[in-house]
Image 1 (tube, one colour):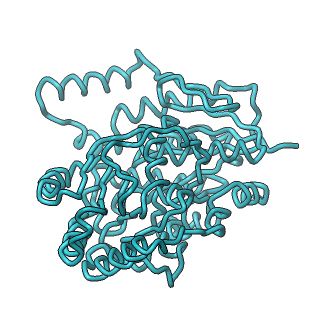
Image 2: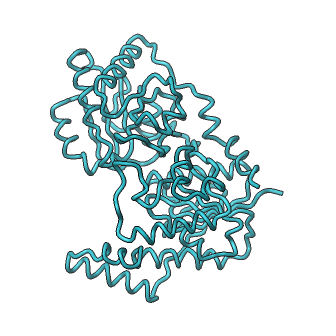
Length: 413
């Protein structure tokens, strides 16, 4: 008999965040493995995934929490005073969070037709609303797999991401309950399981590794952005540039490369494609100074980014300067699938470096300009001599694909 999996997920809109892209890829690959799937999502709009029943969870309205959340929102709009930090200090979470989790729990509890063998909760960002909702449904705890995509709460992030949130004690209590109540936990990376297990020891007993998945998308007829020139040596960073991901050392290395290789001013590009709220001002100023630098600091359709990653010379993964990075970037499977060389800027201890291998050629700390310059120089010279090899990592494609995924779920105790 096929395993029946009920997925409770925050969003299945692939264009709203990298977390949603990763969640949809996981759902689709589980369906491709032959599991019987049903998806309850809190996207709050109708979205369907091919051949997978998807039910949109409505927001509960005209209840006490809903009215409190809307009153708070109107107060903030009118007075410009944000009450949320104070409310979270008292209650741990916002009124909106409580109403959202009640909405999710209520709708999941109603469903009777689909009798799952496993209930998988997926979230994005620092929300974990489906996980909080499942805590309310004790009858499902012995079937529950809590997917932990990032550290939580924020004071358990590695530096420089860590900070003390309002309501940190209640958030910690919430996640300890998740670690104790869920029969299974899943993590996109081995390092993240170990990291979270150092704070919540039950994760070490219940945790399995389910990496972000390769998405099977047909990009053959996708129009590429006009700023991309396929005839040039193109380095691409696609995705959100968070505050802690500093692109300036990379740009400085590229600028020095242009000085030493003046011909590269005519046949190379460095592209930053995606939101960059904290770095946009610097990037746009540098774009004026360096004609071969493109800063397209806005959202692009997922398919367009995938197509671009497949066509460029080199894909860049930029992580923050830190002692460790237990995260598996959501775009890592896309870069592996694109099969272009990856220029990795990460700490020595990082999940991406662990997967690419200790001897991977194009790795550097994020602030090592000399090493970055050397990698750009080497990649450019190989491109010029038509000797730039594809990534060609069948082992990673297998690890990020259906075979490993199916085996992991079929072997659950």
